[in-house]
Image (cartoon, rainbow, N blue to C red; front, side, top):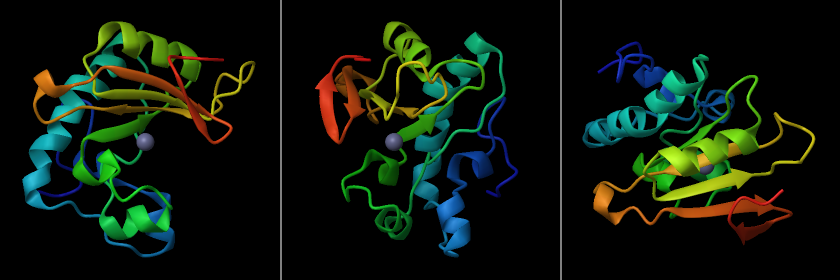
Length: 156
Ligand SMILES: [Zn+2]
């Protein structure tokens, strides 16, 4: 499969795996073939519903992170991004808080985290969404990450 191939109506493989850090550090962020179906699930269950609801094109981040890239960004080695089970999103013109609320109320997910959001700055931070390979295992855990700590629920 190559980067321009579509995983779903609005998203290509390249969009799910692109990374500025990978480009800057020349890190290969090509996922193993076995993870492609999981990237497709992220598109079908998370990205497409968000794209269709808000009607705005957007570029997801970190749908996949190779172990080398994950180390370079300083993320936890157990990050769901390494398993192609998590994606970070922002939608232009929608506050990340509102985006997180919509996902909380409308999608099935494992973890939803409103990250580094500052009230009054709609585009600050981003929204992390993960799904488990088996939807029945989704924990529907909602958190806010701010000031280096996790709080339960969406807190601003
Ligand atoms: Zn994330």
